Length: 77
Image (cartoon, rainbow, N blue to C red; front, side):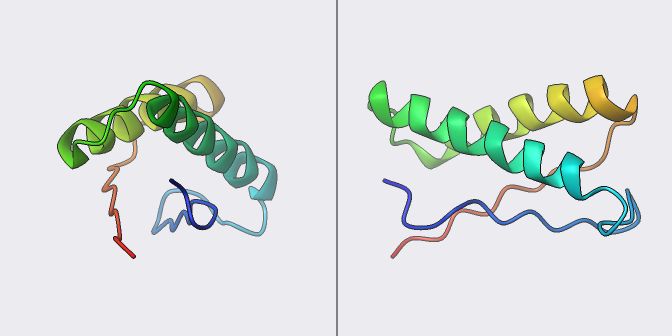
C-alpha cells in the first residue's frame, strides 16, 4: 500500500521548474502503476521496481524522446 505519493528526483535530465507538468504526469503514471500492482497483489520488490522502470521509461520517451537512467527506490515503513 502506498503511504505517500511517489517522489521523483532528476539530475541533468530536465530542469524541474520548467518541466513541472512533466514531473507531475510522471508521478501520476508511477502512482497508477503501483495501484494496479496492488490490485493484482504484486508484492515482490524486484517486480515492482521493474514495472516502475518500464512505465516511467515509456512515459519519458513519449514526452521527451529521451531515455534517462531510472533508479526506483522502495522504502518500507
